[in-house]
Length: 227
Image (cartoon, rainbow, N blue to C red; front, side):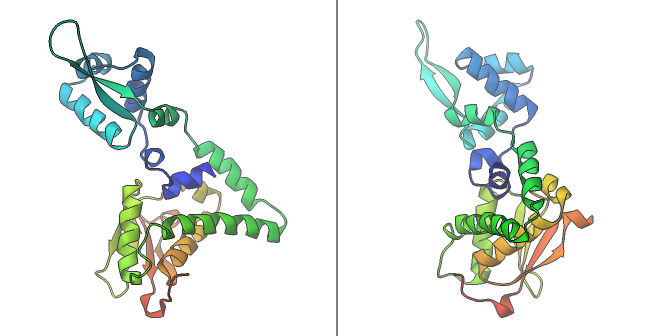
């Protein structure tokens, strides 16, 4: 399911959103078979420093690469090219499709079928994260690992151990359009965290309820070994 991939960061390049200038730049590289820094400055009408910052961001998420091109005279020219991931990202906007698919799932009248579909989504997401974490670590350590893995996938998230119980805090909802349908996706995320961490997880705050962030409190006192 594409949107749920986006929310949980199945691929880093999908998780890092493109703004309108990113799309203009990538489309320019696609249609012109590459460009150097000055050509991109002229195209977007911005400074070399601004272009280099944008290039660095797009390079870090695999959407463009640089190559040296020989010229008839002078030094080789450094030219930027769009990658296959960059081409894919220009056509990837899963939000509207995700909302349609999620509405279909939560609108299934047969409760057993609906639960089976939601369970499959939840279990696959949990398996995806579980494979990235250290099996022998404690729930406390796994929380830190999970936060780092989510951040590397583009989440605005942090683990907080300052209170009696640790908290996973998302500073913005990763799937607000799905949460607008109903709260089912919120419960799916909470249950995914429970499976990955091997401990009960409770909501402390939710963006859906008007708070500025989503906070999940991990009940370490009743933690069990993850499956």
